[in-house]
Image 1 (cartoon, one colour):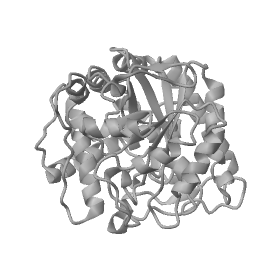
Image 2 (cartoon, helix red, strand yellow; image 1 turned 30 degrees about the horizontal axis):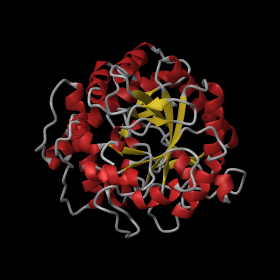
Image 3 (tube, rainbow, N blue to C red; image 1 turned 60 degrees about the vertical axis):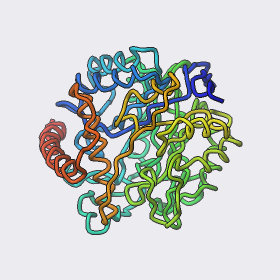
Length: 413
């Protein structure tokens, strides 16, 4: 079993990933002016490329300049200058790893400070309690708007291939737009896009078909979905099984299983519905069961920081392990595992009573480590959660001001 973690994986389209460890997507919040990647992102992913992993997946790259989750998001459209994207792709691929771009639309999960409404399947606002005001009120998408969004996903994938990324991951998890369509809590529509699971999955399937048609066969197309929303009445494990069965009929090269949303951040080990997740490999039980019916490789992400846990994930039929926070804290962790050194990854600890605030603080701590790496510095292991949160809020405010000026120029021209 000790060699499986570093054995190759052949995908349905014939592409080969050199080993079974992936750097899962994380929110870098490192967009430069014009929401473009700059040398900081290239430097960051060069670090990860040097860590001995087989696959790197970027943080969110948004497909619409007027639909961002946060002001540090990268944007890629059919009109984007690909020069900085090529530099980014070259850095991520510099040591031979696959480098996939995660493409996304935030839907209703967009910050109010950006000055844009959240677009969603239905006008169901994000409920963060006293922190709900941080999120824009949503507006319901029309049929025509939905079709334009599908085309924007295809345009972004085509551009990613031209920029020499080796694949894209369509983000259909964590409460973003496609996930909102999948969930009966946020999709109250009665037209072809809502109601039955088949209708709620229509957007995801249409996006996959449009993306696949826009890229070459050799270009990898992956999908990230929730194993569950972890909210009562939401998208459940039984729904995830049925969606993966639908994906079996599509040209999908890998499915990553995660879970949760802003309201129920299960990807951080917390749930709104009271379910208890494992301390590591949060979604392994779900991934193991789904892998039994999936025709494509399954990857699971969430809390993995020890080699023995990563190996146990593979032993249960899952094809790849995604590591996020532990890599931000120590990019060299996979190299230690490859060299048979005993080394456990670190995870940021936050003990705030307010769970929403604690979630924001954890994200802030991880973003701070990624930004340090992008600046050529080493991670700060003993970073203060409160200082990291305040720093992130101040930085976000500054980036939001820059974004509003940029987006106003787009609207006015």
